Length: 484
View (cartoon, rainbow, N blue to C red):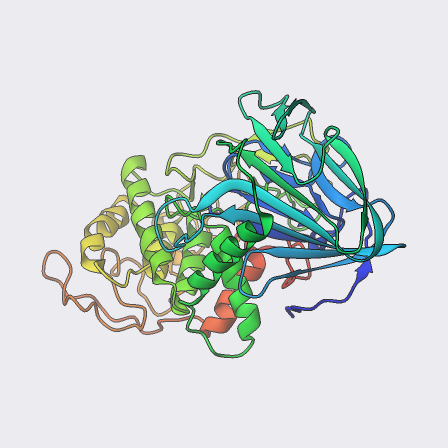
């Protein structure tokens, strides 16, 4: 159950790693970061979701790199989000005081998250305020593989050794002595840090309060589109925000998760690089979002996936965020891995699943212009042979090298009443009624879907959201995920 006001709990590690339920997600539609209950950022890829990780302690606690802001004598902590936003608050209690740490990937002032364009500022904001007592606060930035820092008038310029072409710029409201510094703070005093990449404002004064407020306002504007008012509304709204943080806003694609190589279950073989668009998973996500008022995400995803199908000449299980074929899988032997060796790219990218096209069509049936999309959808259906000629899947989860498929007979699990391939190239509205335009190309009328939904909108969004980020946020209890 989602708890917007969780209790404090001790910060514990298992085999050197924080439990996955002690990690919170922040994102800006271009990349994402995980914030630990201990004030660390153990995972962040720059400049995009699918770039190399700058901070990778999630997969190697000793050498992976991190960005930590925390008291030196941390005892217990708790995490929660500002309501209806992607702004994360971590409260850290030491033996001598209490610190409130607010983290966000900043969004542009006045950003409209329904636009198909980047809304992020390419800036990570970390603001720590002493709420009670006195605290010796530690700030440490360590890129994966180390980094070189150069002192500038406006802060530090950092060049990660593993990504020499990437320049990071760290600014603070207090003097920085290097990549590691300690600050003695009393009640009411604060340490503000802004990590920038891609473009810099070296000589501009920064206001973290204004940046955080502008980011929260952008999330609030997006959440106004949510029309769900059923059971567990708070959980549903939080799950929708989690799904949105997995959305690549510029292209319309969605990453299966912003992480890589987290095994499900722990010790299992399904430690995929999830920073790609798995068509079935993404279709479930946008279908769930559309059912609670977010139509734009479904329309954008359908346009993206049809373009990807056209360029690849045949439907595939997964694509890069740019709609290209996923490269072959490579095991990265350098990081220790979260209890198993990490992987890059995808092992099950080549087989074509019958459920890939059927689920993409049924779950993303657009709310407008659906007949125009029917031509491309029908072409995709023709390119995939009838599913009885393909092996049936004994289960929902393909494994590495198995070549198995996700759904028997190509039937969409989202709309169980839809026929197998007669529905290919036809479209229906989300309510299960016929297409308002009356017919698809060729003059054939679309059939109605006998079962337009597989469960109530609230349960649907919550279920997809709980499994989406591959890290248990406040709404999750375990490391499992859906869709593989």
